[in-house]
Length: 532
Image (cartoon, rainbow, N blue to C red):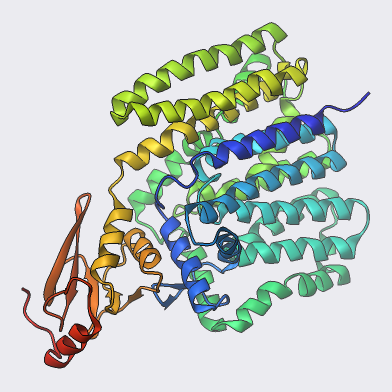
């Protein structure tokens, strides 16, 4: 009898990836995304892929592997844009799910492997928080998962040297993505396994030391290629900045108390599903399988560490979520619905979601044509899921994990279809303001005294040139600032913020910013002039 798990996962991940792609480039870069965009843009402009820079200033807080990958996608796309910056995160989620499936299938069984691979990408933090966001977290989670799963698979087959080399190689890639926490995740996992086997002495084996040296060569090579002392110091300071004593007592207490609730929210809906079935049966026992016990101990150690570090954010725990996903897949493996009820739940969800989305979208956006477009996108996904995907798996949809995964897939399609275009409609017009700044400054050197990175990224993109930060711009140049200085030549409003195009030497802007005007102003003015 042909196994259904592989076929189901292929369908599910394909539809999930399509859901990630819907409107992925519509919303402007937000939160930390502009920093990643600036690093990518400046890498390609400066042709310096070893030393990341932000507004021309060397940046050491994160190594550059994430930006190497976004650079590759930007070259393929022909420009640094929202799509090229965000799609690597979506691909990383899909590849992590595949890694969970392939690794767990070898280590445990097909059903737990599938359920773990379905649960991980449908955790709220992954599905909505970072699944299509230009941040290194999902890529970091992929490399940590590859490191731990490949090491465990090979060590279980007594291929010790290859296990250590593989584990450290992928850990090295994780180090190049987000720094020193990669070692913590790998060592906690390895410690858990060796502790349970009572073989901690293998930490001092020749195969371990050889794997350590060979596997970490990519990361060591990057450290040696940049300012090593500054890079190491910054990477350590990033870790210690979250430690107890580094944040105020109020913030620490608040984070300690809210951590469990935030963890429940980050792992929704599976945290709620697990609690529901546990309360319903109350017969869950600690797993006896060594692999599952390793996953459980490693996840507990990771979770306690980030609970103890009050400056940490929940997303720092994301690389441990594949372990939790497999554990939940194990505990939830045998819970099912009646077939008729499972199908009715999906149909009811679809019938309720579409009219509510239309009414709410029109009320919020005041733009019926935009809502109509979003509705057509969402209905297309619904149609494929209901009439092509689910009929292939009439029996399998009764599994609770499968049913809730499909519902979360529809939730992501809904989110992508409606949230991105409506949020962009409500967002301050940063692209338009950047275009005006680029047009007004055409023909002039431009610097910045503001580090409002969202605007700076789009100005770089519109001018197709690096926008350098400096506290003292030259008098024959223009600069962006958030307070009037020197000669104020233009004023721009971006939401509640105001930005000014100023100069210490140029007194007026010609229509096209002729170079001869620039020369005249630079020769006539050499210092700070009073504000116009």
